[in-house]
Figure (spheres, rainbow, N blue to C red):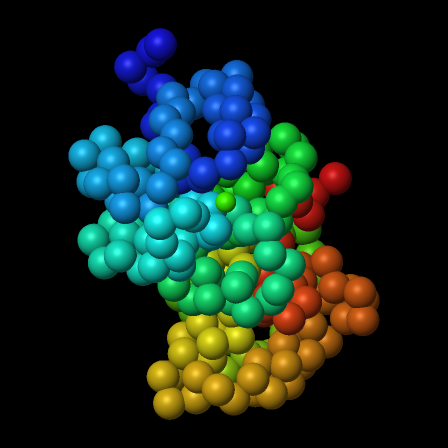
Length: 236
Ligand code: CA
């Protein structure tokens, strides 16, 4: 096993999923270690310092959300949550607690690897300097001058619309919950004003989407929040 391989800590108690993930990730050049309970998982995260954590929410000894909360007190390691629960509140809690993304069981190898690539790209990007420009197939934003051109024509965004778009661009590819968007754009006192996000998102879509009713950039994650699709998903 190469020492250069990236390390993935898998905290999951179901043997079949552990086997599936270990085989898949090893084939994709990851060094994988599986831990079957939350407390031991936390200890291993601290000693082994993985590059990625995949965390199941249903663990035998503690709630996965508590594992996540404890971990986020000292680590910003990219983390994907696995959940069998279709319930929206669970996904929202995980994202609000600092998960980078989630996968609902059962999931395909393709889906898993795409999510992993996406969180690893974001983590790499976060460690670099902020980019002054963001370019997609249909629009281009100058984040420093706060200007945007949609299919070659300059569009005019209100300060709130621009702020909302900037937050989505900084965290592109990631699902942002209503609460995260409200806190980042409007401030912590507005964390419950979900309708703000809906209203401003609709305005923003009218200004930058070719078909605002069927958006290709500002995607709704039903019941959870919104995600700005990354350019590689938009090209071709
Ligand atoms: Ca489980």
